[in-house]
Length: 105
Image (cartoon, rainbow, N blue to C red; front, side):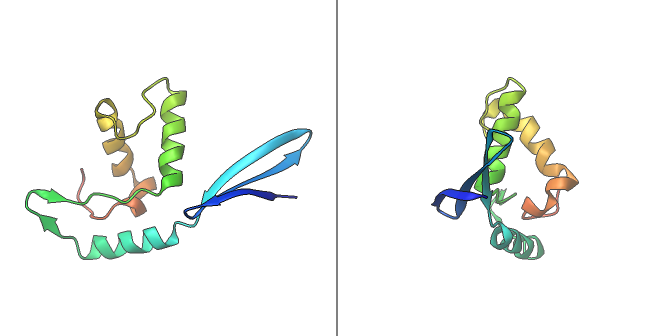
C-alpha cells in the first residue's frame, strides 16, 4: 500500500514497502506547465535579445540533478559547466514539451 509522506507546493512524496525494501517516489502533476508551454510555443515573444526557452518542472529538475550527480558532475543543471549538457537535453525531442519556442538553443 502506497502512503503519502509529504505534499508540498504540488509535489507529492510517497512510499511503499516491497520485498523488505522501502521505495520512495516523488511526483508532480505537470499538465498545467506543459499546457502553458504549448501556449508559449504558439505565441512566442521576444524581449529585446532574450526569449524564454523552457519551463522545467521541479521534479524534472530533480531528475536531472540525480542524473548529473550519477555522472560525477556538478549536480546543478543550470551551472555554467553544465550549459552544453542542458542545451543538448532541451534540444532533444524527448523534452520538447518543456520548450516554450521551437527554435534550437
